[in-house]
Amino acid sequence: MSETNPKKTIQHMADQQYPCETCKFRARYDQNPKSAIGRFWRWHINFCPGFKNYFTHQDAETKAALRAKYKFEKYQ
Image 1 (cartoon, rainbow, N blue to C red):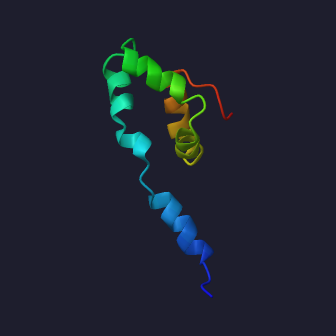
Image 2: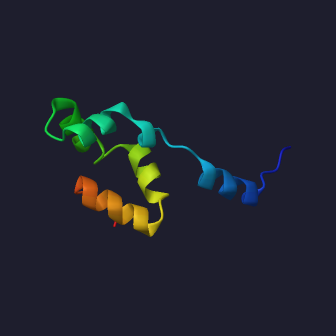
Image 3: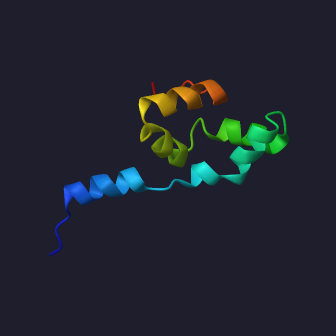
């Protein structure tokens, strides 16, 4: 049986790269929030489990910046 080391798991989560950081749809929203793809991305983050995971693993300062930038009110 293999045992998991909680310290390694926590470290792995801290170093994890999330696809949300380099999402092409997110980049399109940043360029033009009124574009169809940008609006789709903004609507999508309201229920996307990947974005929830990304968002909830950020520090408080980053969460505040994301909330302000994307007018995001979930997961408070």
